[in-house]
Length: 326
Ligand code: 5GP
Ligand code: MN
Image (cartoon, rainbow, N blue to C red; front, top):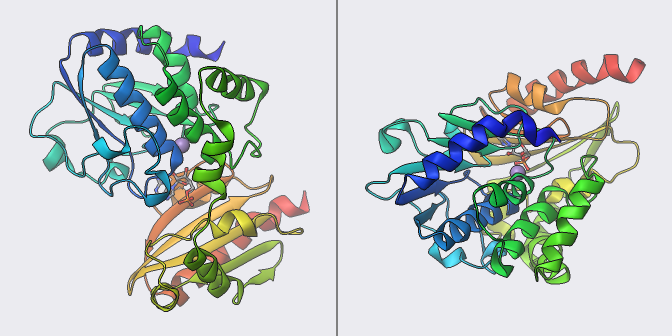
């Protein structure tokens, strides 16, 4: 089993956790279901072995994930001290939203499944084959002597369901489905987790989609659109994200790569890439200072909407052309 490769790191993590009393845990900015679910499962698990665990998200818990057990405990800033700092689901240090000034040193333990992970921790538990960080935690807990209760199972299942968009990404193996089954066995409610974390939409989110859908374009196997600050103002959408419109667009037949450009400010554009099969978009995102997975990646790029669109579309076309010809 592939966990053997990280056995030595797991042993080191166990010693580090055993020796700590207070543990701060951070996940990434613009947290998704895996970030929140994994953070909360780890918090509850560490508390069950008498650790003082503080879960931290620089951007707080998005409304969609507030139903998760323990969500109310999440802090938006790091505690003043800790014995051990764990980063979960963060591919690099910047993704935590906290600079070194706040951390004083790099996190002690780095748990993640992004292939672009920079191994910034003293101990690195990285499995790029895992469908979610939640899957890594599921296998890690028994090694730490932590039993998975119903609240942890719910959080881990939310991580799996959201990162695999409801078990439909190409990294969903029988092993992933088996983990999900074991979590349901421990009491997690799959229908509820699915409904709350993935299915449910607000009216303003769907109206926001409408703004993006009205500008939809397709060319050379690429489908793209944009969402602006003005769109959000018009429909009253409270977030700064794409309201998961990318997942809808990536179902369009004939699109090999899907892109969304979401305006953050006059000079900052968030770009999301989704690839059906041929193109590794993590590599592409990395050339723009971002990262992610082979089939789902993102970056925040400086510049105005039009210039970022031109740059990113031409780089994506250039990368896609040779693979389409294969
Ligand atoms: P999304 O496009 O949904 O924001 O993110 C897709 C994937 O790319 C996720 O795995 C996410 O962690 C990663 N990602 C998104 N934005 C960034 C970014 O700015 N930097 C890095 N390193 N990864 C990102
Ligand atoms: Mn993840």
